[in-house]
Length: 265
Image (cartoon, rainbow, N blue to C red; front, top):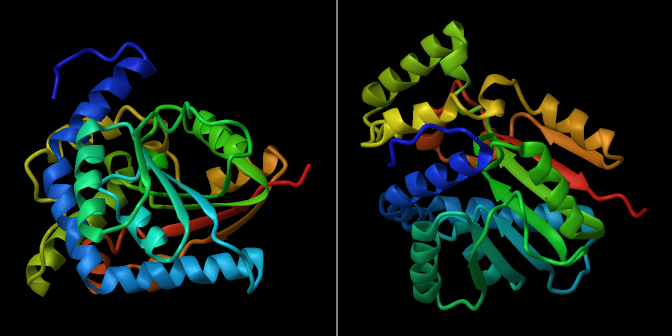
């Protein structure tokens, strides 16, 4: 990753994109494992449940945007459920691996390198927008949310799955709990997701983004409601969306879900 002083959001975006490209191969390996294992069934069930709850039991194929698609997990799952997918990611490496994974999965969808905070789509282009583990990593999450809502059709659904990643850098109690999570991976004999080559670089980037310092999802709910849209939050989403290995790794950083209905007006 480039050793560049970050003077603006544009500097950060470039360096952040380079970082995720560096990690794209190993990240893709994990996604392939998810596609072949329990995680696939878990997320397919989650999307089906959310869509029925939002759109009713009868709906046609939905036009879906996967923001921060990474190596393509959500895009592939949703495409195989019969929906029309467009996946975007700021990292060229992630998009390249997504294309490879999409080809192996024999699905047809669009993949575009694009900044999630500045979407190159017309207003009201999508029925659904999905995103996972992205919002926390953005230099301007308010701009991202506004863009995501802009491209959604009135009454559309925005599903955001995230966690308070790297809050432990700013909270001693959370730091202790994070260290205990690392010990638990050893005790349980499972892979430690944080024992990777670029972990120090990730922590450096995390210190530079606003949401690493804020306890969520209260922040998200308040902001979205201030824009006039309805929000449903589940702070225990990891209880049913994470595999047991994920629960061991991130017990102190639970996954939450944010389901947003775009206002009809």
